Length: 434
Image (cartoon, rainbow, N blue to C red; front, top):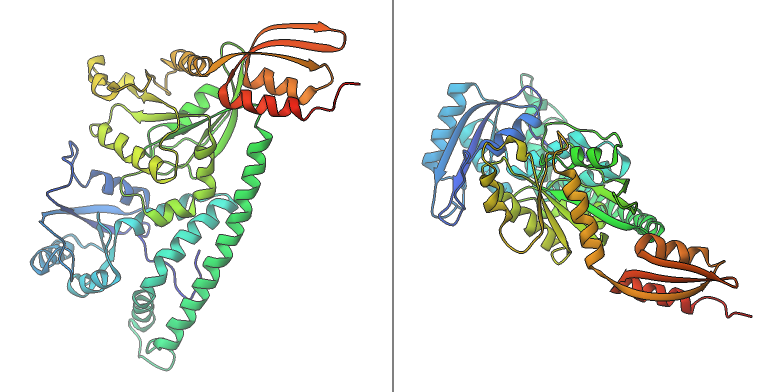
């Protein structure tokens, strides 16, 4: 997407990859293999995993992150397996990548780069493509020298080195940096306009209660959205299959209509500039009235995935939003008692299977209970012609009693504190009765 004479050298389809993980004393203990998730990322990006190397260190090596001895061991593994690329489960500095590539003799791709590669692969809408391009440009900017090194090798391989193929030199790198900075500014400006448009759309949905589904990537968000609303959505057993927020209407059993959205999945160590690039998309999470935190209850490291999602929610300013924890894929557990560690704490929790539909009635009831518990009773006497206000009270509140009297509507309704304040403001803005 970023065009400056080269492309970001992520994992390419059909490449053979060796995975490298580094464990530190402060890292949490994983039940699955430390490189299983990286393996799924590599497979989603199109690579074939042919080897794994895991190292324990007290601190990173400044030059290569893994140290010279371990780098030579990785080089031997890459040669033995015929690997084209080494993918690390940690983020590396540009210098560390350069030093490793000199020792290994193959390309080195870090965790952020493989995630960006997958996002680029799955971006379908114009907005998603812009967001991914912005994240790629921000990642690429300090790494231009390495990118040009790759280009020079590809141009000069197997041919005499002539004019124009001896390397771009500092002038070309500086030109690319200027082009990238200009493109970053342009993309931020355009995404700012998109964010403003999203706010307008959100204001258009203001009469309705809004709910956003969040969760670790591949937790089943799109499947749940399809199950609850009946609307077709793209569902795939892949990491980051969905990048674009989809919003659908959901009618609760009591008849109340709400808007339900799902959004991009989260992951541990999600690159911060990727979160920043998707800020407009994540506006749906920040502006929601309620968050459904979907958890893959069958995953052995579900608790760590919950913590990862909580950290991202806090990072985007949605940490204090009311939430219901939804334990998905509960049908895959042999013993229901295995759900108990995931249901600890005061947060309301519901077990479901988005695939089979089991438990979704209980989820709908929990949502209705949350809406009702957040409301208190209020009375209004409103002109029958005040359609916008009447619609707001009907959609945001729970109507307890309605009567008509000489062109006026008397309503007894339950509303949240915030909606009561908005309704009072709307009543004050009505023209005086003649």
